[in-house]
Length: 175
Ligand SMILES: [Zn+2]
Image (tube, rainbow, N blue to C red; front, side, top):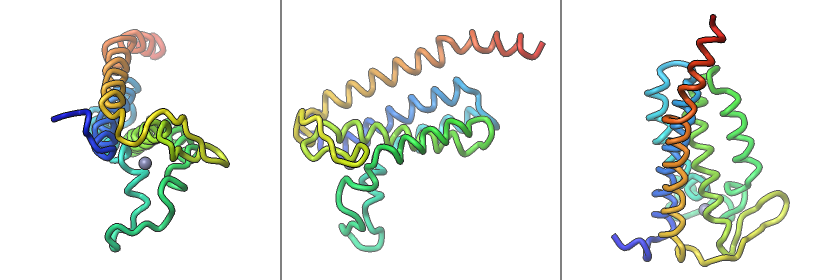
């Protein structure tokens, strides 16, 4: 597979997986309510779904190729995804479904991060902003690689790093 010619959708899919894995590391790290290992697996999947969500949420399911809103408007609105991430994170350990929801939000935010440098940009608060770095699909190989490096770094830190430290602290808390 030639990474240089990847379409943007594929970049969103590949980075969605990375987002899901990083979010799952957070779920494992937090040891949230219920069977958190299973939830972590679900989080990988919802991360992938979230990675493409801002684009497929624009589509009308029963009308092929038709959008109910303009491309990169409401479904790409940064505060909405940040709020979702915040709410899901706050609910970890209380509601089991907040884990997968957290993955979905991370995936969505990574999607926005990837759309940001494109000339069309994304709606940040009230107005649209673009980093104007490259055209859609031009830097996909770099973007995908950067996301995976970040995901691996986060996993290492959260799963193999300070997690044992926090477990030890938890034991002392119980004692
Ligand atoms: Zn998009």
